[in-house]
Image 1 (cartoon, rainbow, N blue to C red):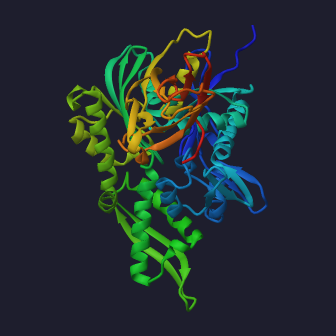
Image 2 (cartoon, helix red, strand yellow; image 1 turned 45 degrees about the vertical axis):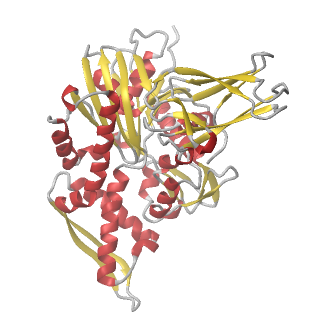
Length: 507
């Protein structure tokens, strides 16, 4: 009998990516990279000879080539160039961003231009190649995870990245849901679990009820601009301020100096999880006007780091509190709190969660590997010959709706509505002889559409001409199990129908 092609699970992370698969025996295995590491840095670069570098090769040359090294790009996926998030990123990265034809973000790297989908596709391709070489079989299909708080356009973007390299993304699942699978599959549990996922670039929290092989998400929330990078940046700003006060020199304009500070900031943060105090020394960081070399010489304590980052932890706990309210649960009704993402290794994060829930978080999953393992388990459950059937009942992270008169938001699907889900609305013409109906679709939790993300515009043309209000159009909104929206419009009088997956304009 011919061996079936495996569907692998891919955790496409902001700072690191990871892949896993399920063996014929049913055991889950992480796919090792060169040197035995299970994670690949989510970094893409072009060196001065024009070679494309991905993963560790890209990370190794980062200090000397910061302008042509792309990292943290997942934060920009599906964002319009004019968004606040792009503005914030511009302040902390050395690479160049500019608006493309549809106002999307275009990156200039090594005299070439790349879309964010192309960068994601290159990372996915590297992971796929590593997996193909290890498993000695071509990999054509994968389950890929995304932050629970990704909107429709960002999810669509990940699917499109797969298409660019001929990798079928058979399913997109949320990272916290994948982590819950890694924790709960095959254990016959009956528990309510909070997944607190603080990764390199994004924060998610989901409350999931596990009933044996049924994983039901009760509520989810997050911030796709809160993660380890922000903890690093807090250290970097402190160092820059201290250096400027001592020397009058602003190092923020020197990309190579900034990269050296960035590298040491990340190492310092990690070291302070195990130690109370570490030196922060960088020799010959810059020169005075007279040509004298200057060094950075400081000490960092765990207390200083906690003081610089306490507002970030506060922000995450405010989101946890809101999600508990959405799920209708008290902290006492939570059976386990799972930690996912490298940033949860910070002792203060664990202390604050212990105080918040009245019990210490569980060490039931590996913070860096759980998401890939869960994705692989789910991928395995989708194969025809498996006896492992997993039922995922997920929700949408933010409301989806339409623009009403006066710029108000009309909710079609509320936040935490279960998916898959479908709703039908009746729309009518507002002018005589109107033959087109245009709708702007938004996603977000604000009552004014301007504060929400524009997902796209849907135009239904070919409506029969008549007096205003005389023609009705049935609009069906359909959200798939992956949280991707499709719309259909139908004129009941003529039977004419039109459908689209909303992925049109970039805001």
